[in-house]
Each structure stands twice: as C-alpha cells, then as structure tokens.
Image (tube, rainbow, N blue to C red; front, side, top):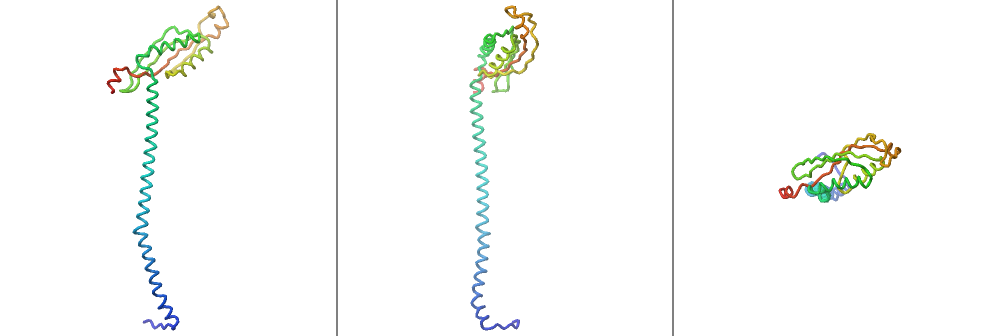
Length: 197
C-alpha cells in the first residue's frame, strides 16, 4: 500500500502484537467509559450525600442549641416572681437594707407591660443613706439575690447628716446617699397566663 516491506520477523511481531494492541485499546476505552458512566455519577452521589449529612448535622446542632436555650428560658421563667409576689420583692429589699443598717425613707415603683407573653418590667426607685461599705454590701447582696434584681441607675452624694446615730461625727463623715433605680421582671398574673394557654 505505501510500498513498505516488512521483514519476516517484523511481520510476525506485527501479527502477534496487533491483537494485543487492539485489546489494550478496547480496555482503555472500557475504562474511560466506566469512569464516565459509573465512577463520576457515584462520586456526585457521594458529594450530595456528604452535603445532605452536613446539612442534617447542622440542623441537629441548631435544634439542640434551641432546645437548651428554651430549657434555660423555662428555668429562668420559673424563678421569676409572680405579679402577685411583687410586694414581697419590695419587702425583701427593705429587709435587706435593715440588715445592713441602711435607711430607705420611701419607694416608688412602676410596672411596664411587655409584649404578649413576655414578663412585666418592674422598676423600683428609692434613696438609701448610710455608710458607703454598708451600701456597697447591700447592692452586692441585692444583685446576687435569686430574684433577678439589677441596678438600672445609681448616683451618689454626701449625706446631709451632721452626726451619726450616736452623735459620732466620724461616722457622719462616711455617710453617703444613693439614688437608685432597681429593676426586676415579673411573670404576668394568672389571668394573663390563662389567656396565653
């Protein structure tokens, strides 16, 4: 055909190796075909399954975090005083002040309703006067109380006392007066809780 003449050894090698070359070509074609038809779709299914697993794991983690948050909020909700218990909260503040030998001449309070289903915000405004160390202990004990009392505003001035309760001028020099606003949150009354249920 092209005028090539092969030696007898080359012709014999060509006859023996030609089927092997064709077989190798067919095997390479089958390998490429199987890769396209089987391996690549399987790889895509593995990647899709991995993505679905990651999404499910993230959703599960979010669900667990939401449940823990909900349980924590339920625990806090149970520890909040009821609306009817608000006078006892005020009395507890007065008792705490008396324990620390602090004078509270009077108190004002306001209740602010939150959105539906949220607790009421109760603000108590009062003055305390006495020794600085006693007032500091009073504030610390009040804020670490289990009723979730927080000091919202606080300002201080020297007390106008000229002498202490026993006529002690040195104790009078240490006396200070704080204007305080303390807030807490109250569970709505049973009527409002019944409306929610």
